[in-house]
Length: 333
Image 1 (cartoon, rainbow, N blue to C red):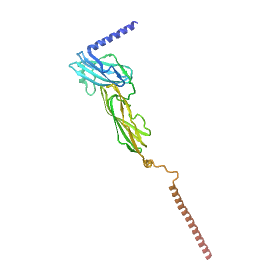
Image 2 (cartoon, helix red, strand yellow):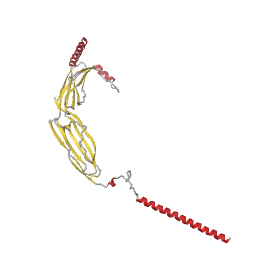
Image 3 (cartoon, rainbow, N blue to C red):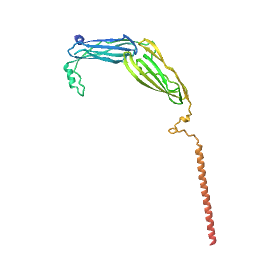
Image 4 (cartoon, rainbow, N blue to C red):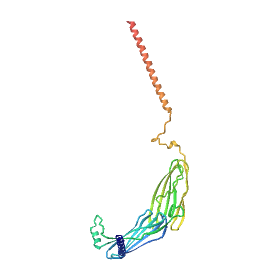
């Protein structure tokens, strides 16, 4: 029991000393631009740390701990030099909550101090290899951020402020030809990497797709997005590309709205199937009975038989003539 009480007292002393030491070293403050958010709505987290003890160089390290409940990205880190041994560092992170629940976001904050001698030695010895500055690190425990994440009132495909446009290269193709369809989604918000504009199959139509991100830059309002969705469609008969509806929530306006795509009708011109066959690499299948080959066979057979009987007749005539000559010679004797 005494050992347990002793350990608790020691931990309390260390925690108190840590807080006191941190207060002597620097002042710091964590703020957010919202108290509650919807799923995938951007939350700006700002953390500022300012040097208070000016006897040594001071560096601040701050990070948001990762979690499957949210995505977090560093937006900006700025260091303000306010004089000798006097710096102020500002960190800005964008957090996208992924689950409708109360989140507890944890942080890592370290104050690193280094003497003038340690900094000078780092610069002197730093040639091709990087020489780290020898620092004394003080890890500060920060209170977790409690964040309420609200769920949507209905199904939502996108979060942000967007618009969509589309172009098609032709509305008439040859049978099994290709029609190219492009959708361009632009705006600011959460970047949906799995979004598919043509989110359903079109009967008897083959569809090939590709995605191209032209611009994707993080801001306080989310990502600035300009994404092109490219589709190639092929079919044997006329078909229609239907209009699709994307449901969107705008955090800036706190409202729901829809994006509609255009519908397209594509005419397919019929083509003789024989013209589509590759006769070099994929020749046409031969018929079961090839009359041309049968005719050729009979011609060669007749020629053979004619030659054969002609030879037989000639041979018989030769032997008959020789027999008559032999008889005439014997009679003469």
